[in-house]
Amino acid sequence: MAKLLMFHGQECPHCRKMMPRVERLEAETGLRVDRREVWHDEANQDLMRGYKDALKPKCGGQLRVPAFLNAETHDAFCGEVEYETLKDWALRQ
Image (cartoon, rainbow, N blue to C red; front, side):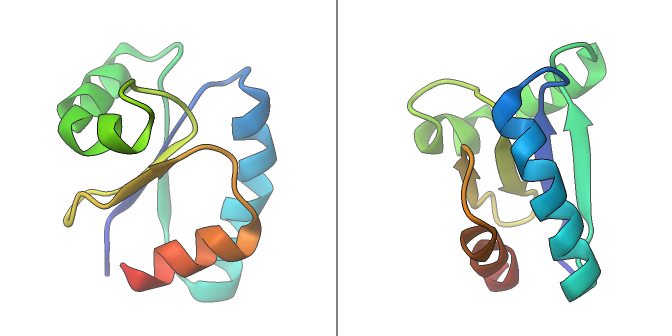
């Protein structure tokens, strides 16, 4: 099973909108998304920076949240998306 990560900020409104979609994804598919809060957690910031080569090109050249990453394939996307888009991405992994 793919190792899927979600980098998010605690106060980020786009991240907050994605949380129920991630929970639904997990409930419907059995996939697990490892949520990592990066605005207040230095260890998670370091982890996100470790994937900057995969994330930056998909995030407009910067590290932004919410950001989703397959830690094995380095496929990523950023931003708030509809549930079906999230699900399609996750199931391709």
